Length: 299
Image (cartoon, rainbow, N blue to C red; front, side, top):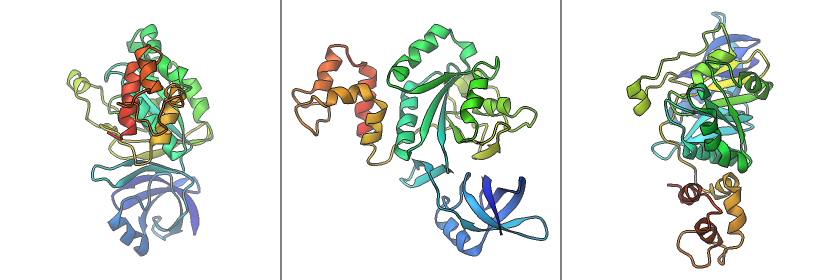
């Protein structure tokens, strides 16, 4: 048997990189029975053992234990694993088309913290918006210790720094449809036509939802490491027990929370709440406070 890494999943069919070549694979019977119960048996990024067949295809015999899982709650409450053995989540937002959404960034940050994965926030399409405006949007994130990088797949701004950040890592690009994930992949992998792109029309900019990437796909980077491109997300929920992860995303609020009268303060209705008092004094951004409370209640 040979060891490989899963680079693509298409229903019951899989693509595995084995000895620097991609091999079309299926699952061995035991794994196939598990796959019928849950689609998380084998995902992009998994390290697997493959038996090579005479026709050049292969059979996945074994899946190695995962170092990390980047997962999100599914629509029916199930766990949806986006990728395995991930080192870094790259949360991509657009400065425009679609509009920048700091709250979605904060959800990605909490998701990454809960998974124990580093998060890099990339604000793409910065060539479409005044630089000072972009800086005002990301200032609260930077002040709370978030790693933020401004890029443009059109002008090349920030791409060299992004390449350096991704080198030697397994990274996942995630974000809403139309933010430019596939354009970033194409810029990082020139000449490979790695990902399909589609211009975001005025209609889809107002109601983004047409995915240009329909399934997660892992690409080998020339600088070393791997990059996973994922389908666009419409909504992003959090798992139970996310309170600590949410607290990590809002450190300025957590500092005040230590001064609340009640240890289990929800910062919504309790008397002598240091967080609410700081919001009233203008020491905590009110929008960040409202989203903090919402995330802690997992709404």
